[in-house]
Length: 141
Image (cartoon, rainbow, N blue to C red; front, side):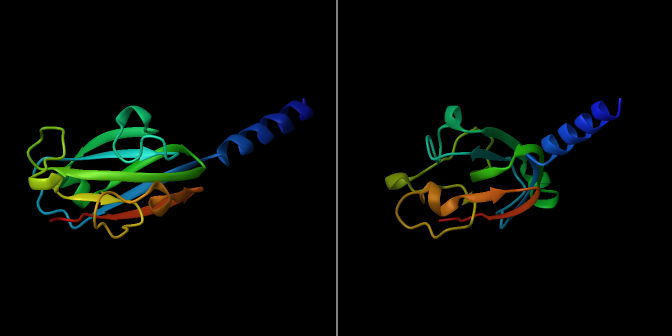
């Protein structure tokens, strides 16, 4: 009986240490209209915009993103990168203008400089280990 209890406690401890929590704080949204769409990648394949290659995808109302942020549980410990955009008109796409310049705000984990095209996965990756907080600052052109 004691061996079974020790084994159970060991398994519970092992499983609890391989998954974390991710809290994303969204900063510098232009307004509270529409939604914030996000993708979370656990490797560079498909980064930054291929939904089918992402680890997790979702959307949150912009007013909730601005005030409460996003809380995700059971994220396995490891390296990730997040992309997000503020879909002000709720058409589920990042609207762009002349030369593909985004008309809506966008953000990447680690808030790298964005000049000509999206940053690389390596510039945006961060580690989730236990409880992790992330601040995404939206850029507007």
